[in-house]
Image (cartoon, rainbow, N blue to C red):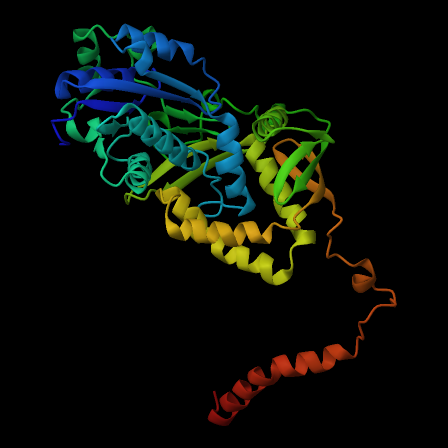
Length: 410
């Protein structure tokens, strides 16, 4: 249990039932003043009810903090991550993972501003988010006290949580009386669904779980063509119209949603050691991921491109595990950002029934030389005969090994 002498704590507060119970639990268990922080990361929910709920639970108006972080989220977290083409275990575009360092950072900023002794979150003791929130908090404020109610309290069942809510007159929505069929986390990059009906990885995800995409079968029979413009590795325009980072991702989300793009059914390895099955919807991010690799294909040198692919799994794992504010992530980011200097130009894509397909790419910094690759005899400095010596030199060690095997009769 954290320090019982805590006088003021900043709580990451969604306004939902669980964090409302946590708010009241903090007040009753620690006898402390609670400050709430609610982040708008583009989850698509009205946040004013969170303010009203906090007021109802006795939080002073000046202690209620609600911030629109959509632009900062995409500009300073999502886009830097997408410059790396990051995908955890090859496929997961890290929609939940990348939101946690920003929320954690704001928790610490508010704690410093209001003179709080501690911060608190609603992550459970089984998941990754507890690690991400707390590693961020300790990195930015080494002496911070972190209160994790799910690891401290004795409310072990839904019935006990509801009983606590009723005892303390916390409003319970009618749909919260029964067990939720699955757990959802959403922001501008993605929506994730886990738990309950999804816990058997052998069973197909029910249709009602999807919230960000229409079924590919229901998508239009006619493809949608779009262009995405890039500058220094970041998307800056769609179909020639310049957009802010958050507005650009929102536009791609709509295009992805309408074409059934971005669904992922995944069994992943959590940092805490267990496997979990989740369903992720990342419509705009999936399109952006495909487009970014396409513009890199003509603007990055082979050595740079292959080095990026080699370090990507480590970079993605650092984000997944909560080490956004670690020196190694920042070092890798510097390398990645350096690689993006000439990653600029336009990618044309065809969106069709669940797929985002590259159909064209161009750049003023393109390294693609048609004269070099043509089968026709070009006027460039490439002599086909040079390849013979190139191959003989590369074959030298293989031939030497082969001769040894032959000598040994292997």
